[in-house]
Image (cartoon, rainbow, N blue to C red; front, side):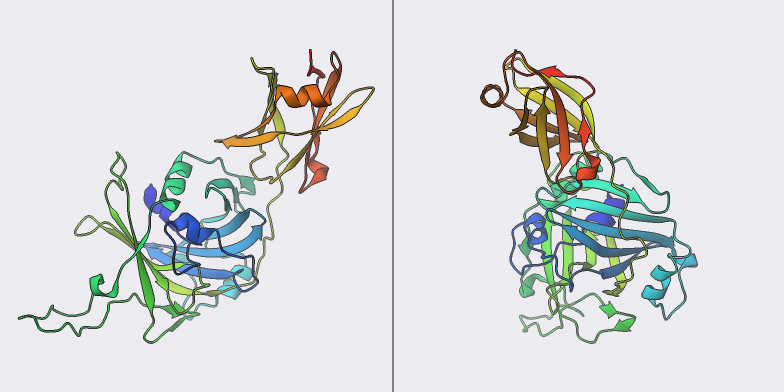
Length: 338
């Protein structure tokens, strides 16, 4: 299962030469035109994955993944722009992930193939942990080299091993890569204690995809390599339809704080919370937290005392700042300051 998530998580990680975690390397990516459309095509067993930077929002990056079996792939030379423009004939899935730049969690996943959102699984925790693992840059002296080791203390003049770099179908001569390494903590997962090696293009620091991913060593290892890369600005699907949020629960807790739980709200950056009655209308301050598929807004009892009238009943209105047309209101009125 983790191999599937390697394909969709280790894809926009490389931005700074220095960084202690994948998350830190993920966050600095600016929403530049030069970054949008960058893609890599990876091969694992009999399947290909076309991975691309699709778009940005202020706090998220959207990553596109198109999967297809090798036997249905277009013939060489492959012009990926044409293939995408024709809506990727032969593909078995076409997904768009929204990933938070704040905590590296997958906020949402939309299937263009099914024209529906896909429920997120517990693999989110795998992705979040992967992104926050400490990273180290492997020195040149520790990297793999080509040929047999020298004997009798002879100087090691062997060339460094580097993965192949193919850009728009052309093999690049003498590419330069940096190698980053992380170790998965010991747990009950398939990755327990395994080394994770990532090779990034040193000549193109803005290119965010690893050309080679290797997990484990010896006989029990897995690797994923790139068969092509480049930039493709053909976007047949601009964006998925926005899901409307809805109230899951509205309550006052034992401290008389207002607690509002929302579903379908992870993809929104900010809200305006309004309490209205027959006599007044107030914008309420709140703190926001997320857990799994729930977004929770909390307005403290002290703030309620400051803003609402005692014994007054209020209808609650929630307005997504990014898309006010998706505003919702509560079906009941609430006594916020009994």
